[in-house]
Length: 143
Length: 157
Image 1: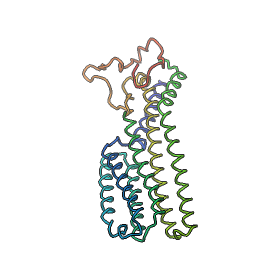
Image 2: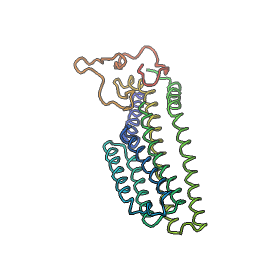
Image 3: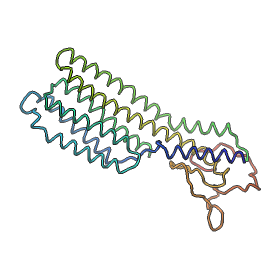
Image 4: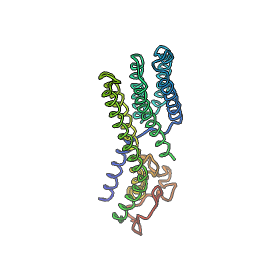
């Protein structure tokens, strides 16, 4: 009887852990693929901007559409991630990327140097790599 | 029913170690270089400010971006940690499940990642289980042999 109680207790603990924050969403190829595409898009933009900043071609006014497009892409990814329960970390990562897009836009509008773009590129690269790594980890778990 | 607790404990620990071993090294491999790289970007911003390339306001903006990036790194580390913990729980539950199920007399812990099954395994019409592995143990008729913890995680006895 005592062992039976222990077994039930052990099962309850396992159940509590299973239903707690240890739950994480399943891998979604749409999120991973979208994040990879967006990473490439942002990086291409920054490489281009690094070469054209300080010239009329690098002016913020010529690139307003890019920022709107990126925000729209992030929104699409966030919607896809929000469909599943347990995807809060992915959604938060997307929010953090969007915050940095907003800050880049502000700096671009004020004027930005190639050296600053170099730093910004490193930061975006890290953010996107981290997001993709998290999604890949979910995939590995399923495999 | 006798349980070899030491043996069961070792089985569970071995399964957990085997499961999270690679993931733990992955977490370390991710966290250390990424956080070091972010520390380097703070130094880069400081240098740009010292050289007069950027003013204090711009340095502040870049550090804010760096802070958001650091939080992104932490989100991923947290996620990898959750996945690791989850795998550890699954491995331990899988290793212990067969023993616990036999003790309680029904399939309380399943061997899949959804560790707990609240459905009794009994066939409602006959009171018998479909699967021999899930057969309930009658308290009046104890098992003949002690349970050995020599089984593979994810499989019933």
